[in-house]
Amino acid sequence: MKRFTYAYTQSIARWRRATLGVTAATLILGGNLVPPAAIAKPAVQRQQGWNAVLKVARLTSSQKLVVQLNILEKPVTRYANAVYQIYARQNGRWVSVYTNQGARLIQNQAGRVVLAPEVISIQELEKQLGRRLDSNQELRTVVTLRYDLTGRQEQRISFESIERYQAIAQTTTTQLVAGPSSSSNDFDDDEDKVRVRRGESRFSLSILQRNVTLQNVIARISLKPQGRQGFAQERLIGDFRYKLKDKKHKAKFIKGLYTGDRVVVRLFTPQNQFIGYSEFEILSSKTAVTLVLPDRPEYYGTVRTIYGVDRNEDLVIDRNTQVFDYFTQVSQVQNYRNAKVTFLQSVQAMNLNSFALAGLPAPRSTCVYPTSFQSGSYSLVSRSVQVFGSDLAPHLIALPGQQVRIIDINTTQVTVYEVNQLLTSYQTVNNRPRWSGRDDDDNDGRRNNRRRGACKWGDDDDDDDKGRCRHQRRGGRDDDDD
Image (tube, rainbow, N blue to C red; front, side):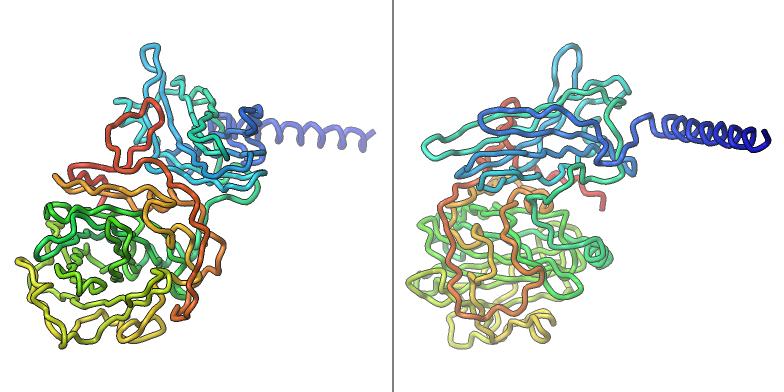
């Protein structure tokens, strides 16, 4: 009898502990804290040969929403991207409170693909809505896919979910779907921490000629993030059209840049002639960069790079600070993919008048480079480097306009671009080794260049009713906290 009484008592105690545990979790976390695998399984949505599940959750560690699309089946596409939007119901109608910048590219092959999580600030939603989100606020999440098939272009479908804010499941991780993601991330958490400790920075970029002989120039800007073991795979920030006839064009790049990272600029004429290459290092303070192109065609291929600290962000190098000033020269070859660039130590045989501009220091025959360019495993001075190396992704090798759309730099006011947002707009980076070494090989880096571009960059007409991407932030707006 004693054994029976003891067993019964223990059973009741276990039941009470379990009940209290569930109740506590419900009270503390709003009743919806669940592991990613246990998030309510929405119905599979099927449209035009696409089968997908849309998952939405709230991060417990911060005031953010996570949206992730699990594409269970897709057709073979020539091009495809995803655009994320959030709507809030207000006064009986849906009001747009979020549209992502850029477009998230999707692989072309058929089959399953898990898109990278889209992480959205609740504060941003509330800012757009004009008030705080209450527990009964209805939110409509829409992921629009735009794609091309062979013989059929400009196709569009949407997957959506409608939930009250309080009913959205909570999670501790941004990865809501098990399986490989279609995005490329060169860093693990430790590498990210290393970069953050070096300090976040930013830069402005101007491109000028003494006497304007080029109507405009296209600058392909990419990032080489620095980690503990060297530089990660080069990643595209975007193709930008600078109109040289208007010297007021300037662009600022913020967020996602850290001290020691390197930025690469490849330059093309409107006729897609490759005419120059520059590479510079992100400084610990805000950086002002100017590229000076020659105004005489016989000097095409030579670029003067001048940059330094710009603490007050007036797009001018501060006085009494270190100025880096050097020249690069690309080889003139029939196939641009075979071009090499040399970082010149001196330019004594060159007419420097073509590179002299008011407001900039007079060019000197002896170049001044940062220390990391002069020595070490990643030095560049007096070296010839393959411009389009074999380790580059296809959209870094293709001619402008072939794989990604060109972004027009505003000519009336400073345009601000968020680098971390732009990087996620190009998710078809091939799976190469994480750390790139010195690339002075002779590979021509041939790639398939048939894929068309993302979405229409530079169209800043604020039309968000049809899911059009808005890519420019005008008027020098800077929402960064530093």
